[in-house]
Structures are given as C-alpha cells and as structure tokens.
Length: 394
Ligand code: PMP
Picture 1 (tube, rainbow, N blue to C red):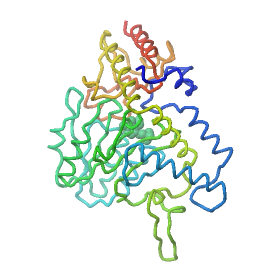
Picture 2: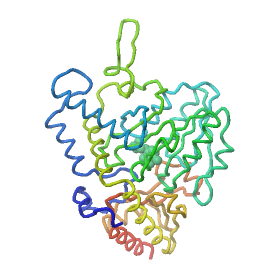
Picture 3: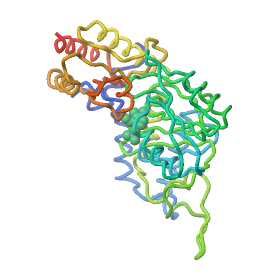
Picture 4: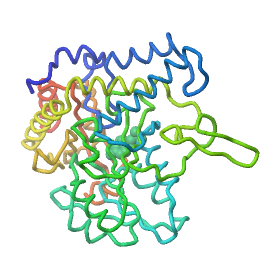
C-alpha cells in the first residue's frame, strides 16, 4: 500500500480525522477539491445550464458539459451517451421505464442484486415483462453455468451487478456479455460498487448500459450516472432544456445527454463529480485498487481468526472488492455495528443492505455487519477495527 500518499490524501478528507469511515459502499466521503467546487459554483458563477448566453451560464454550462465528458472518459466510453442522474437507483429506473418493452419479454437478473436493480424490473409486470434469477455458488462466486441455463431467447435485457455490495464478489461481466449477445439480449451492469474502486473499461467489458453513483466515488450526494452505448430509451422526464422545437402539435427532442436531463439538474453536483473524477485519475485507479485489495485481505484474514465469526467473501483476492460482510454468533449485526461506533468511532453498516433476496439465499434474516473500505483508509484503521472486533467477540 506504499503507492498511495495516504498522509497527503487524508488531509483532503476532513471527516477521516474524526471517525474510522468503513461505510464506503453506502456513500463515500468527498475530498476538499470537490467540496470547494460546490462552494465555488454557488459563490462565483451560479447559473442555469444550456439556456441563454450570458457569461455565467456559459461558464456553468461548459463545466457541466465537461464533467459529462470526464466521467465518460473515466469509464473508457467510446461514444454512447452519459446521462447525469441523482443516483444508481434513478439510472436503473430510467432504463426500466424508458425501454420499449414488448409483452412476453423477460429480464434476467441475479440473486446478488441490490433492490435498486430488482424493483424497477418487478414493476414491469404490468407491461407483460417477467423477471428471472440466476443463482450464485456456495463459495459466493457468480455461477456462469446457472446464468447460461437461465437465459432464454425471450430475455431482452440482463441486469447484473459488477460487484456485490454485500459479498464484494466481482462478477465475470465479459463472459456474461458474450452470453447475452449470443442470445440477442442487451446487458445493463450495476457498477455502483466497481467504478469507485477499480479501473473500469466499459468497452472491454462489453456492456450496453451502465449505472453507477457519483456519491460513492468521492462525488457530491445527489449524483449518479447512466451510460448507454446506444440511447435507445425514452426519457423519463419531458420538459425544458431537451427540445429542438415545440409546436402546438408536438415536439422534437435534442440528441445527446440533454435529451435525458429535462429540467434543472444538480448542476453543482455534476460539476463536483467531474472534480471527483479528476481526483481519482490523479491517484490512479490501479493504485486505489491495489491499496484497497491489501486492506481487504488484512480485514478478512483477521476476522477469520476470531471466534464465533463467519465471513461471507469469495476466496480469491482478484474476485473481490473491499466489501466485507460478516456475522458474530449470538450478536445481532446492529449490536456489533453499535459497539464498533461506541468503542472506537468505527462506522460500519449492518442489516440487509437492500439485498433481501440475497439474505434469504444466505439464510441470514438479520443480515450481516458490513465493513466497506475506501482509498483513504489505512492499515492502522484496519488494525484498530480488528482489535475492537477481538474485544467484541471475546
Ligand atoms: N446498486 C448497488 C450495488 C449499490 O450498492 C447501491 C447503493 N447501496 C445501489 C445500487 C443504489 O445506489 P444509490 O443509492 O446511489 O441509488
């Protein structure tokens, strides 16, 4: 973990001197340059975007547009449309609502999914769309054979997560993409937990749509992204800022991301997300990945030695990100989380993590405790966490 200048990095994140922040899967912290960009927008050039020609709107529009370009480049997008939303949830709902479904279509998803990548598909029942599930293996890895067996020629869209927000497992998106395309299905990948933590090349992966959250990748809250290789969906909202022309009898919409961003969006947030991407690029995602991988292995190895403790992670470090779910026999996950906070100011999540079907699959009605790491976390923090867990499990 020597590659990252953690002392320098940690100066940029005001909260890390107050708490041990191990809840990065829920939302990340923002560094000073991102916080500053929000203040700067409000103070110096606040204006609406894509409208009018005065000086302030030109600066705001240019930076907001440029933030879209930066995000697209960050995920290796060659072409396609990068839409700013408020969250992964909004991105996936936009897909589900805007797609040209035909009755009898099927959506194939997996038992790993966050509710954000399930409920929008469930709701399509009244449009004649059914949802199928692919299972995982008992070692918490993705089951490609089960996936292949579950796909049918009626499958219009496959919606899977790139990395689980409970098990940390990385799914084989490239292989999945090939199977999808062999069956004439399109592929949407939930990248909420991958884009912030590893280099992602969306073209190499072969996905058609990607959803992720700006607020989980050092960006401001209220930011998310939907990337589409081909902008095949109808916009979720219609209104100002997205039209070529409007007459009394109809309208024509503009092309590009603006088509999907009617109304006034989170302008400061979008610009801030661009600054977050600059920050990540400067650190280097390979380095971020290596650092988090080392910390993850340390957490897992430490927890595995503790009495009454079960850790729910895949064995291979190359198949997992820094999301570590565990349970302690005889203690409710909320109790463990509460004690970590009270005893050592350690913030972890507990419960079902918006993944009830997965909890059902794992036989864990109370859910798990989840430590999720970020690039600003340190070995010392991991060791404090492990020492505290040792006391809790003793
Ligand atoms: N998918 C996954 C895998 C997630 O972890 C999350 C956030 N916990 C979401 C989707 C939803 O993200 P958001 O809250 O930004 O809509």
